[in-house]
Length: 470
View 1 (tube, rainbow, N blue to C red):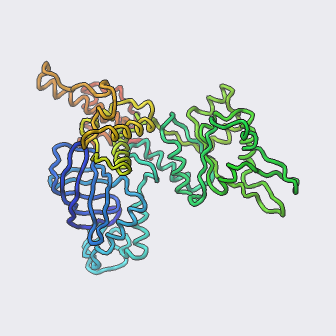
View 2: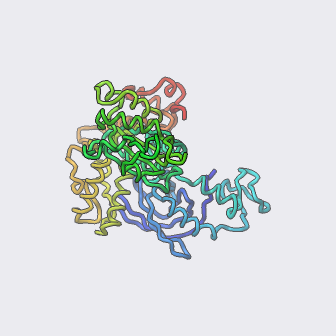
View 3: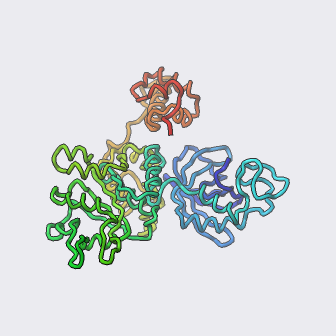
């Protein structure tokens, strides 16, 4: 069953990605995905960019799509970077084109003898101008929050945490290596929260200066009352919004006491006339190292670590996110080319293996810098590994050699493919078998055949072929 109604149409679409530009036809379209006809794909490209216009208004869209299935007639793609504004415009262009008679349900394709408000089979509302619109909008909401991209299981868990924490006002601690996107996650939490219309203020605790530090989290005596008030300019700027403390572990110990006091008094500091204090802000903090480790080193107060340990989101390094590096690289190319306009169409096919195999010690910051430099220095239409400036060692060695027999080459390829698929799906037999298009039992036989038990598989996964719960 489809999550959102899909519109049947025939619209020309230009496909770009991995050194290929082709023209095809958009056969049907929804707010989440599309099916493209007429492009004979010889290899399963993981990502492709779609450029098309919606008649009659001529709405031009440039969307990154992830290929989710391939058939003889074309392929289906999930739309990845279509944000709220683009989805709103796309819906306005799609809604008038739906058949008002509804011969079949737009969701489950059940044949309708007469038009009603609700499909008798799937129960979905068919009144797209009323509650149906609200249902479509809710179901089409992408899991990736604003400003974030990724399809790997580890990032899907992060996205779920972001959406859950955006509905609360509790203090959140973000951890992860430098450059892994902690500030982007903090901004996403703010953008989805009730404070989205209020300021988002970033304070780098490692760059604070002594001449102003003493006043940042210290309450000053109000001359007209016996109560305290906060006068520091940064806190005034964050009024009613979100305060993001970058590298909170770098805050000097003598100032951490003021931060603890500030957290304790959130929204509880009275002002003249019995009014409650307007210093109510949401606090988000980030640290590259676990606060428990900093406490043991004597660099963080234990009470501060306790206050910040309520809600915790741990971001994985880029090397552990699988093909997310390709998604982000293509999105960055689109963003940078749109700003500088130098004619680069995308990434060359050879760049995919380089991006996958490189270790990315600088994480997202390094990826952004390399892609921006590559777009600037590229002399062709496609960004090559040389443009990215990655070392030759980042490219995986050739799989086959003249010394291998045909049977040996097949066995080697099969072993590496199974091992890489298991690693990509973090040892989840069910998901790895689906990706390989084989049964779980067949995958178990291959694991035994090639002695791939070094891949960590839980007993439950091995016995049932299931992934972790949730």
